[in-house]
Length: 324
Image (tube, rainbow, N blue to C red; front, side, top):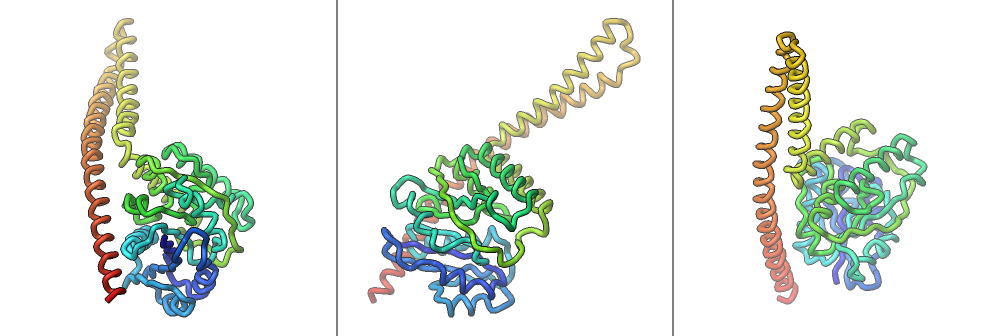
């Protein structure tokens, strides 16, 4: 049983060594623990400090590609290196490495495919009241959309078993946290959460410039990803609302027409026709999007099988190299 802890990082020379050294190298139920860092185009000594701290693997981007890309590169890299369990943590030492055994325990017991560390944001002193409220509100929205029970949807401290990792496909360039939860819920993966501890804040977040920036990006990501997985439902609600407006305006015109004042309300009839036509077109778009979503599921299944074949081939080559 091999566990690989992946750490996406960007200019983290001050904290990356502390983060790596904090990771336990012996865990009950795990034969081997390795560390993989994904350098997202750092311009400082992040990679050098990581190597000195004992990282086992390094994936480097020549230029910055964003957290979501770095995360997926880490997942693919860990799978190629034979990981049975993958833990993702942050390079700023936000999460305590000592909690990794607690995080992977539901996977070792066969109770979960994905485990999310619950920071219990209401207890984090560095979070403002507004940030705590938005974090809890966002997590509630994600729970409703994904049909999971995770109380801290923005937590980056997560564990994935090998099969769950193969099924992950992140299309957002912003972050992976929200998208992968919705994907897991729609993919019928078993998602659990466990309480984890956090360390004092070492630096402000670099993922967004402010709370409202994060909120805007998160709402856009949620809308996009949910529409990908439930296009017919989303377009039906939009189209249904527009058609309702058209019907309401039609009834308004009919009312005035019956009482003999129809000539003064022709505008209502025109707008009613526009709303009805647009609403019908939105419904048709929903049907087309649902067909595309069905094709996407087939593509994801093919990608899942390709990933397994590639990872299996890579693992075989690595084993052959070690024995030769």
